[in-house]
Image (cartoon, rainbow, N blue to C red; front, side, top):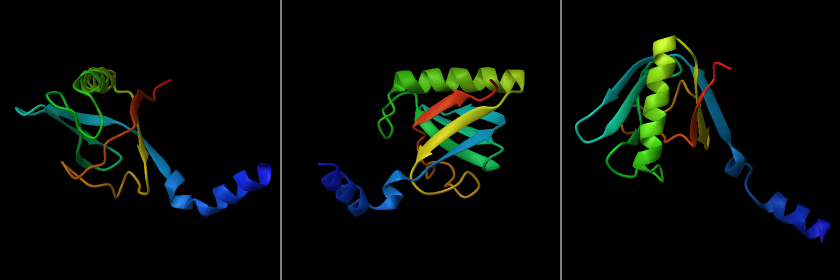
Length: 112
């Protein structure tokens, strides 16, 4: 059984496990008329849309987006650090911008 499991692991591409996170300061949090939440952070030095308050975006529900937005505003206000965690290949400095940005798996307060 163990041998079969190890064989399966070898057949799964390594990039399937690729992840990265960004520990950043947040300069701006913009909420657009359509509900998009656009964040300017030090990891990209540009705006990245993370979610939408009106409709689900890449499996992120509006309620989750509202919590992320509130957390990011609080982090910005106290001058703290936010953590964005992403699945897939990439880096904070090279991720897409605006609506081409990847959707985070989670957003956290990295100030702890």
